[in-house]
Length: 377
Image (cartoon, rainbow, N blue to C red):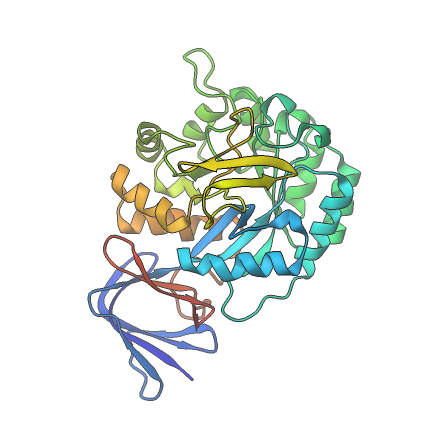
């Protein structure tokens, strides 16, 4: 049955259609601005219709973790995430032993989701090819030097489902691994890296196009060496992940990033772990004990271990702490991730023929209703 959403402000990629309508049929957007005669009708008066959020970096939620390596865990995350407006996501691994990583790569690649869940788009392989001195919460015992043959094996196991790889590009000086990933349509992100500005320039020329959780686990700006963070400011070829939880980045840094880089090259993520949606207490990440208290998830030594941020709260933080508009946060939470992941042909904006991943929100971006591939969840 068709669904008609009427009397609602529709945020397309380029325009806002006031008091307009949209028709969903068979999980896709059938028409915009036209009323269907037959079908279920919803009145959206006073509300806004925006594209669902696309989460490019998430380890866990609601007690589940990608590294659990089970369909139950992935389904648990996929059922929980629409509550925060996330209608599709990339399941993110953590540096681990090869046997565990390969099990997860196969399991995620073969996962068949259900209606009403956020869609699992594939895998974000974070580590193990990272710089030990910038490990953060990545378990150091399993960090490896870039290994092209091992990555080829993982790509074969994944059957096209690896979407992003986070690595320290300075550890791949000749760019063999980076080139291979780019040639296979995989998004390469610099993260957990000791790279300086020149290293990032070189990496971008080799194919790196993204920065993992900008400012965290990388070299910041110094007046004689602007580092990886400075590269994110200056190099137009880089899109940067941002964790807008007020913990990973101060409010002042959030303003600086928004004003200097702009919504066109920022992507909102959560980097959340299994404690998201759960009470304070003790949890795990990559086999490590994590204490969650007062909005922070930390290892015993105080190192940040992901976040418990929800996407909708991250969006509201951007609206409240910067000059970002509703259109800007849609760009950062939906449009940019879709383009970066190569799925903008079917997700990331409201357009006829695209998946009906939609959010009904008020002007403060409180979520009233979420549609995942046309199903109200």
